[in-house]
Image (tube, rainbow, N blue to C red; front, side, top):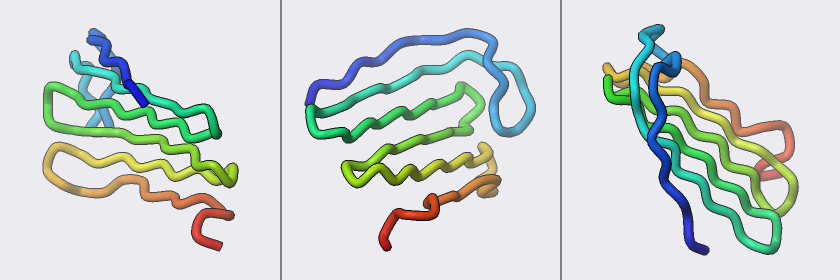
Length: 77
């Protein structure tokens, strides 16, 4: 797997600020998809789609407060 990084500007971070940052995307041929966003303020957001079709999403503010940690209904089952 070889991922790609792209810069973005003015996206809404989990803390509510509009800031710049970077996307990281990666995937394999079997269905794994990784999509991570890193914001200049220190917030981050992730979405991982696994081979079994399950999805895990997280959103963490720059102060470490977890706003979303959703492993999806099927992950780990």
